[in-house]
Length: 615
Image: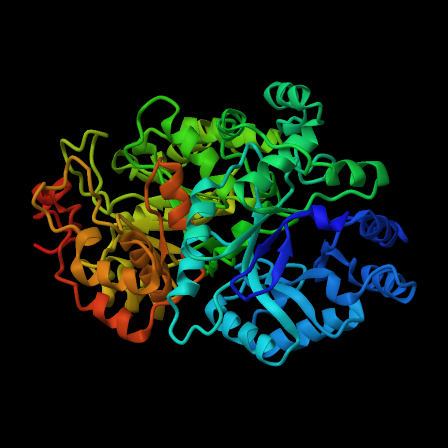
């Protein structure tokens, strides 16, 4: 029966059966052991597990019994297990592998995988670290040299992350396999093509959409019930499950459906006596909608995608995520709401808005809906908004704050900022006033005392203006944050040093130079196209945008790039798996030319005593 199952020749020279048994979430006593025995006797030879599944010991016992009974030989089996996220430090890799070997009671592992690219301090994933998986990979290679494992690979890695490994200096062994979620609703065609081109095999987990798993929404679309798949199954006298597995085999990747039911195990094996037509394959591929069920496990309480983002502890005692979503100039209907929804699902928790942006109501409605759906908690978010220039009079501050709270439909604001140091008589900025921002600041402090806001700060303030607040009589709360323009062409090094010295965090807006904004000249220098930045990006296999954001994070300030494009939102989040060298950090800092794109908006007020920019 095992001879029916085709194999994939890995780049390591070993053969991996294309149909395997998944064992995730098999926690009842003897359940996984009985499933392994039944599966092996039916012809399965590929068994997939992981340290975090807690199924290694039971699998090891079952396999040992089967070998003792003469029903199988160890060399006929292909055992896959995975190293969990708390073992990425190079000196922890071998001990983790030996722990799995001991649990399995085996001399070697056929395929050993890095389970997830993001490392954490502990197995419960309470705090991510900055350990680079390239360093982890070097330690993985040593396992092969020591004979502890035959092949090494990764799991849940994207194309860019695979490419980083392939391009790393001194690479000895390419990843033999990448195990990722693939279903009819998540075809991963681009990733498959890349892997095939580079000699990396792929294994698809959760091929049926993981029905019954607690991380999958009850109303998530179910591939097994899809009418198109059901109809194709009738055509071949096969079940939807058999059609989906056959679809994977014909696309060239291994599949590891999880089951402990002997009848289903047998049914899943019965897929090698027919072939889907080219037309049916295309029909199946057309069902792709980019729906990732395992994405839900990146929410709080499971794989915490949001935990990838480091935070800054502000002087108010609250933590501000260092990567946020900017929402300026998102004025098309539903545009900002859709962006916020996508961003939160990706893992963003820091949302930046302002009364002047006119995006508060849509942001509030989106967040309220997501809270109701159980996708996020209000306390898990960090909401920033700003008071506009016509509300600087002390008696106008609280009403302005309450107006934003009402628009956002929230009980409190995490960080409330004075948007600009100059006060105006009207929101259109036609006439500046002499209202001193020190008086405005005293009114801001009262918002904290009343519980309307958790932290207060400023925006577009210079070092001298911050110093005035710090030295004012009766200061109760220092500014927790100053949000200013920072880009490779406007490094703001002096302001950053002053703020750091005085315990004031910094957030950067327009980190890419605000391309596409109406106030930016067409011939303005574009950081995203700068040759130095582009070249640094090639070195790390990252885009210019990712390099700029990473540069900011390593300099110690938060960033709020604006985007409504889902792929760019995801790309902006993908900056925590690498670190710029000290040399590259200096090279980007050397690009500083004091060029401020936000200048045209306020230059006409350069003679005002509170004008914050260079004159």
